[in-house]
Image (spheres, rainbow, N blue to C red):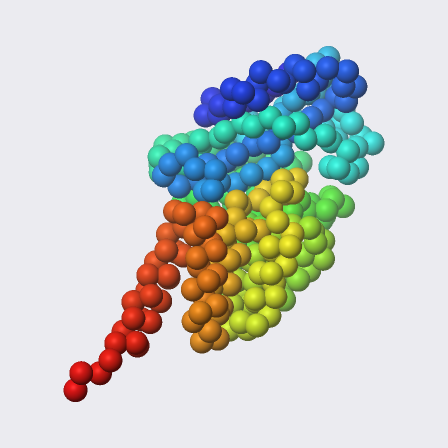
Length: 302
């Protein structure tokens, strides 16, 4: 069974090869490459990518938890599946449009989701995923205090259940702290999150941003270089496109500016734009630097 939401679409070419990919397979569960568009337009450079459990064998007990953000009961059906690495990722893409600005701006959708999640929260044995989903909903409308509160409650809930909190909880926690400009509040906690998930490029990107905000430009540059080494092909974590490429280059540019190394900053912004030509921040920074450089080279006519 391949399951999808109403605001999703499977890549047509990928769908044609799905049966062939499954021929001879004995596994009961597979990941699919889910592309969550954000922003105003369909743009894979402006999207979160993740491997998601979307294809499962019928008749062996799989069912869905929760009335919203439905989740398969994988632990019940496959109790020996302790590592995500055991689940194969099929080269099949599903596009999700529900996080685009056109949809997230709809107040009635937010209120519906919050209502359903709050009812789940009242249940004594509710899953810590409920707090995470509440945090995500508040994050979409930029209520950062509530986001931070619920993501922390989710982390605590997983720990109390003797479970390792999933990596995307730490992604949301530290992106929220960065959004409210709390570099001090995010440091050195981000280091502990990275110890748990050393292969998660987004956490390294956030570490670099925190170092930049603390004006520790040289260490930030080293961190962004590590992001480039990691790349962004590991979609077992919820990964923002560009974390291991053009976003890292953009942040290298602003670090070089902080160090007064204008030529290196220009080269970094140009590299970011070569990878993502619509990177607005890199384009703006490059234009600003170019105009400043031109002014500084204009001869004094007095």
